[in-house]
Length: 324
Image (cartoon, rainbow, N blue to C red; front, side, top):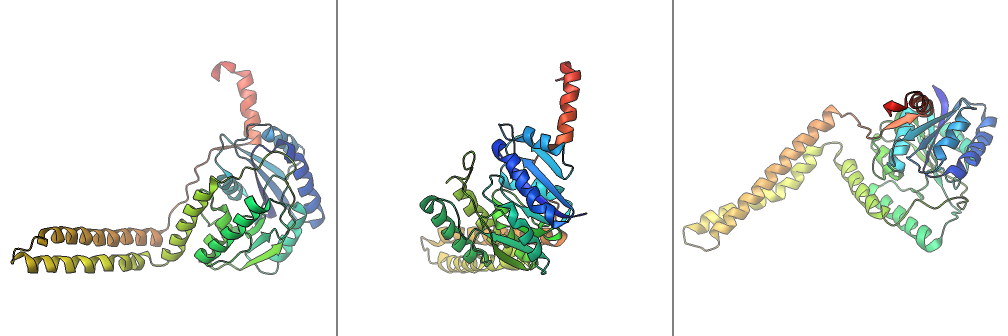
């Protein structure tokens, strides 16, 4: 096992790959640690993979992974984390806005006994109206909902102990909620100030379309963090009001049906519906309790090939074009 793994998702960043690699190596060379770099090409349509694979052929520390199509930043990050062999895993963006020179600071902070270290872009080089203000509002909401107050959830530059991050399921846009998801296990979390640069090449991959995904993921995390300990109890608490309402409505309908009340039958029907809902909630709680107690296997829904496998496949296709 290596000391440090650096995971970088890439999507249409062919102009950024080489300067990013050079910045990372300049940062890690003085550390005198065993380090690996993992570039995950998230189905880029430009030459990102070719540039990265060429660099990997000259530096055994660099491992390159290629998705067959674009899955998104979180699956790309999850793939890199899954393949990482380091005791400490650092994640960062591939657009040169995160500064690799901050990586040694993360490693030093981890040595103080922290399990997760989160970067805080205190001097963020983004537009105020479209990026900074929405980010501040989102960070406040996330802190209130999850109970994990972090100044900059959107900063991808973070460090994790491998045994912590590898137990956190990642999908959709949940990479920004990793500290909140991991908080169930009670890790020690720290924040450090990091440098932030304006984008040099290409265009931002973030847009307003991600907002609804983030909100849905936030609801999911709140549900998981609230129900994870004893889900049956929580579902039972939800079912009790409906059960009481059902019993009350059925009792009233029975009491009034003898005097020919016109609303007795509809009330009985509504009581049965509320009773059915309470039973459904209790059964759902039982299923959740079984899942919680027995555990589950994480299914990673991505398809990938490594740089070496990619080259070998192309060589075989050239030799046997009729099999393509």
